Length: 376
Image: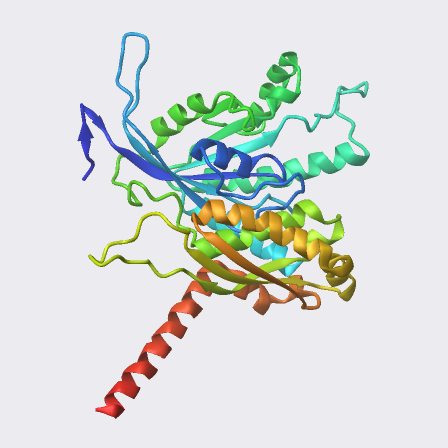
């Protein structure tokens, strides 16, 4: 039963952000949330799994100049870039996209406007595409095929087209882009934006709220994400690898948290948490997996210089995330062709990782309980 606030019903729902690699999906997620949740780099296919960010939007009262909007909880779902899969990892990433499109109320299809459109150069007015332009069109067509399937969903699913990075093109180029994309799909809305400069994001949220169904919150009011902290830590480490290493190495790496020891709360005589003094210390050990011995040498660097740099810059971000001091140990391990191994790919999934941790803890508790019973 929906909650009524000053005559306006509360809205809630899942909003999936999809598009080609490097279109700006993660930048948009972070911009809408007002803080960094998804890692962002200039390299394509940075995001490998669905990342949910929870955005609470307060009631905006109606005025003579503004229609206002109800309060809402928008669960934003960032996804890997849509691409044709080659490896088992690619297939898993595309499965994440399909899963995000199955459980959604609104879809944001984001397009990078700096990818030029083909020009009608032929005498018949047909667009000629060659080389890189032809590849770009093929990738656009593949992404649209994924979106076209939403037409078959019972009751339909509204898709908002976001023309991103408008700050990088001339204003005169925007209308031809709107005409081009509008002819390809019946979008519910077409909104030119800049996720990086936060242009038109308020307008976007108003349109999204208008399309969401009435309903209750899916998450507690102050919860930012469903992702566990250890997954966010692994992603921050992987982000630094992407930023600091060359072209080949980043895509062949995966980060697994092998040890994560949260600091116990320091209590005073009254049993309350102590204030002041040194910040607590979180101890983390992470393994960086790569596919070749040569990649391992690059990741470690001369006398360990690269691994030390990755650890130093990652630790600063992790401390900001956790609000504690962090002791971070990094190890590099070779797992040949891991991107093509289904079992290894499954083990990288944070949902599966949580299940394994829970099973391990349950087994340890059973052992402890049996030991206590035996002593009695």
